Length: 140
Image (cartoon, rainbow, N blue to C red):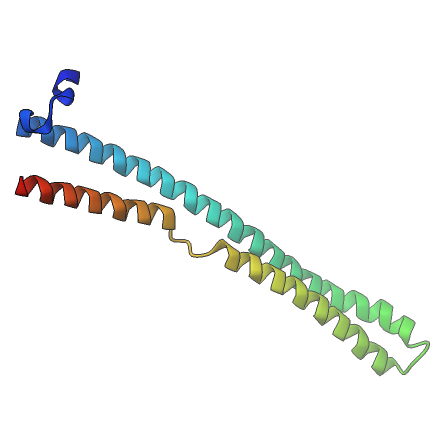
């Protein structure tokens, strides 16, 4: 088989060329699928971190409001009216949760589209190469 592959394409039989092309396309598709799986796993991992941050921000907002209102309002109520102390503590809790939510949103956006761009670009290039080769072989 090795001597068949070493011969120029014009000297090989059509059946051998089709067999060789089929094997190469099969290997190419398997490799592209492996690349796609790796790229999707990486993007999912990045999105997962962002979602975790966003979730932590939500939990912190919930717990923070309750805890801060109870503790801080009581402490601030010693120096000012209780209603003003409650408003100040609520604003601080919302600001903290907002910062965490923004950080999580940024990480999710950073993950980008779930479409495996490197693989789709590679497949397009492969299709172009095969198409060009078929067209040039048909002319020659």
